[in-house]
Length: 354
Image (cartoon, rainbow, N blue to C red; front, side):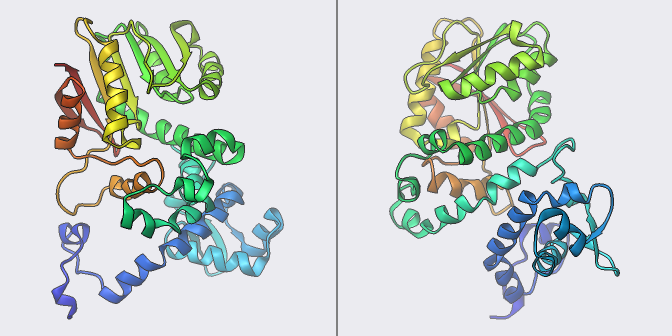
């Protein structure tokens, strides 16, 4: 088949660029795991931080990181090829704007997110992708012997990588989400599955009248309480531990969930939503806010289409379309009122009791 027979990818087509050579394109896709594995090593070696003060050669970086200079050079050359670093004519490597996102202390750092997404744990998971596609079953038990969230609660090292990544995602998405939300008429906001409290902290700081309740499993709630105290908002926020499959705290006029519903197939998601519906029963002006990706029709690129495979393999969740959210909410006793896209990959999905 000639190259002309292949349609240009949506991004190239939108920019008026020629379609990539089909052979080169498919080889890029097939070798993506190599870049991911090398990127993970660069994160663990803190290469970006080592370059913060200026370019360095591979031998200099090897001495600082306890690496083999020749092997490290080959890895950095690959990452320079894909734009993470830049190699000059003196074979010194420096940061690019992409590489700067890996700086540990930079505003908007993506370091923790990249560490989790490229973690060797995922290579073990994706060994079983064929099983998931053939059967529709998750592979978490094949890899860990137990459900994924149970495993992450027990494996402290892997769990720490995961929770750092979730906090990183939240920190980067919170400004966009808060810009799309108006909590001025909300008295008490319950963050269901609120993690370590990053979003709720920002909401409380932005809306001084707001009271909050962070609700999560006991081991997560304990860490959240300390974070809220350090942020100076603990006086307006209580922390409650529990299981959202059993109940959620009552007494609030707004409930929110960020990256929670996408973790679950329809049946367990309905249980969570129904518990929120019970908590809102009879609350005047009560509302539910879901912060999740909404997949649009067509082939346009969206991060959610990648994460959807993660949902298939691990917790058994799914990234949903607007219609799927509307139908799911209706089955739980809610009426979808609006979906607001934001400047991050997530949308704000709002609903009221039907």
